[in-house]
Image 1 (cartoon, rainbow, N blue to C red):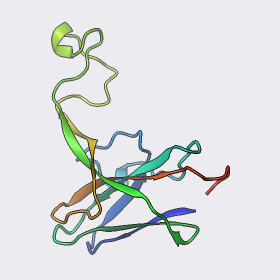
Image 2 (spheres, rainbow, N blue to C red):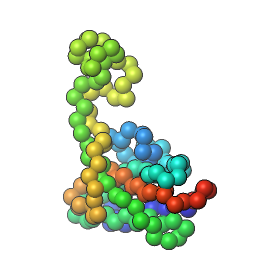
Image 3 (cartoon, rainbow, N blue to C red):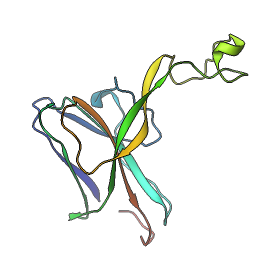
Image 4 (cartoon, helix red, strand yellow):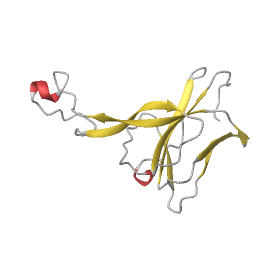
Length: 147
């Protein structure tokens, strides 16, 4: 079983494991997002999930540890960086600004910010009330099966 343990000193601390394909926004909260219970992956590739932390004590660092079958497990950790979306994609052209038609298929109405870019980290900097993280690992050498 793959487990992530978190250490933070906040009294109102929230954390949720999130499917890596689910959009996460800086105004998302851990309590409103669906909890990821399983990660499926092909062998010899990269598996991962996102982790949203909120209610952090801005003066305290966060520590993330991952275990596989009760043993420490080596993962790569990235900070999710939010980026601006200033206009929505158009129905026919690149943006709604060109064809002046509202696209009903967008995930959110612009303007908004979304976690999209990745910044490799070894320690998550203190000073944030919320953090988005990507946790990933190589499945190279794993035998078929559930872990």
